[in-house]
Length: 168
Image 1: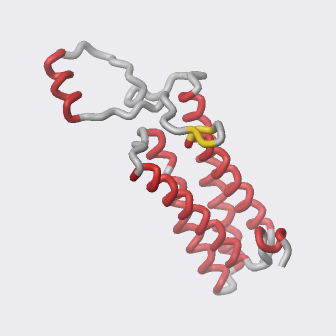
Image 2: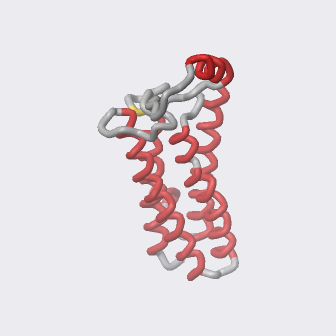
């Protein structure tokens, strides 16, 4: 079996299973990092939605393909591609917030919009840990986790789009 056949097998079912495994591996990785103490910010948590949606969509697509419902499988691949393409845009937005190219949401970048009673603020700070969206907690090979999300989501979007174009 060649590398091309391993990465893009002739079976729709196998292509869908590869997407499922990649989505699950990505989720496992971020959960492991979280378990090691790297708390996700609000944008990080939102970026996971694509993987939460993509994994069951890939499983459903594999089911369609295994039952010779090739048209539905192709539609499933197209939907997966759209889900991950949207996540590319969202993750790139997060990278821009981290790089201070543009402001992020006020919920996780520290802006206050109204006067706050200092006593109430101090009490809230004792129980609440805000993870800032504009501060990188971890870089791997020079990229933040949001940067790696751009890469992973783009790869999955391209892969799913290619799989959607193949008849079987």
